[in-house]
Length: 218
Image 1 (cartoon, rainbow, N blue to C red):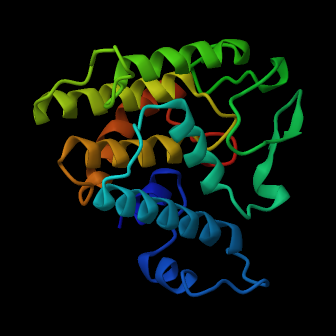
Image 2: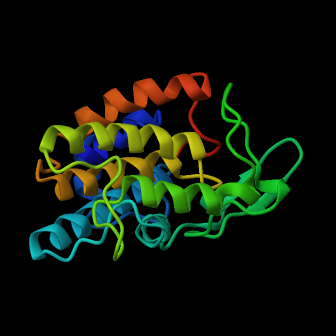
């Protein structure tokens, strides 16, 4: 159901039955192939997060490496069409797992103007420091407290802050929901109702983008 709601938030009404069928394969001639491929990708990435959480091997959900790997894994097998970002002035093929780079990848999302691409690494480094669930050696927890309630507040704040930074050319909404799912697992509250939490958070962050989805609907 998290996959269904994540798609629905982006305006893609891929029904649960379609998602279940897509997990067993998608026909090349299917006119909804890309939408179903996105749903399958979300399901697979979330499944991996859950497996890592169960095995006690889930990395820090706020780390740059983990977040970039979420983006890279989500787009494995994506078509060139799915990776092509086009605006009035620029057109380029996105590299999964890489932060926005260069002036051509600066973005305006609705009414929101995220940080310039050249500043993204600094913003995400501080994001990790601020929202680390597993502080680096000698570090200390900043936004993430030890109690469940403190961690829930940190999750919501991190979700909003991530979308404010908008670190990738596309796919930020999906990655932020997968990151929040991983944070829920790390916080010890599970992720079974993460679609509800993500929906509430996305309703808030949608004000940043004027109620619009990102360029390719991710």
